[in-house]
Amino acid sequence: MEYLELFWPIFMFQKRVLPHEHILLTLDSESKIRTKDDIDKFVTAELPDPCTDLRLFQIVTKCMVHGPCGTININSPCMRDGQCCKSFPKQFKDDTEENVNGYPIYRRRATEPVQIGKYSIDNRWVVPYNPWLLKKFNAHINVEVCASVESAKYLYKYVYKGHDAASVKIQKEGALDHDEILSFVEGRYVSAPEAMWRLNEFNLSHKSHTVVRLAVHLPQQQPIVYQDGQEAQAIERAFFKKNNSNIMV
Image (cartoon, rainbow, N blue to C red):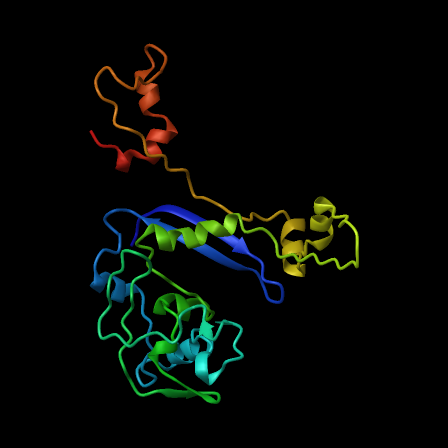
């Protein structure tokens, strides 16, 4: 995947750890992941073999195992009404399945569990990852194939989520004197990493460039406006250079 058409990172600030980042990569048509074999080539949700790649096995078991939760750990933070909100443990799958309504259902073959701390873990608990990225950065890096609007919108919603805040007021009787603006100002919580990021005026989000899909201009319809005699200059504009691979003649 040598050609990158669109790059959009969004920085997120958790309250007790360092900032993290959500990144959506839109690939050129020749580099897109289209088949199950393509998915397996770049994303895996299985424990690696410690005999062939011990370092990757150590990173996966340290950084890419969810929970565990469910019946073996009902106090896990992901538990909601007795169920894991991330749908772990997953089901065993011999082959990857494409999914038009969300992320692919990754291959998770049934293997012997391994002991991690006090829990026995198998492939059902592994968060999808890319082996090269994991060994490069030695950190938790969840990699997913976004093949539908349902999965892509997961990233875009973070732009509008806002900050964590809670406002509670208890009084015995009478009308509630509630100043919504003041409650927001006093309840907004900015963690130390976020304060540092904003004081240094670092970017909170970034797009490599803007891609606009234009309608097809039919004869005598949808006129294009430019200065007479400057047709060549119009064609040479940066917009056309940036999108020349997408122009249909």
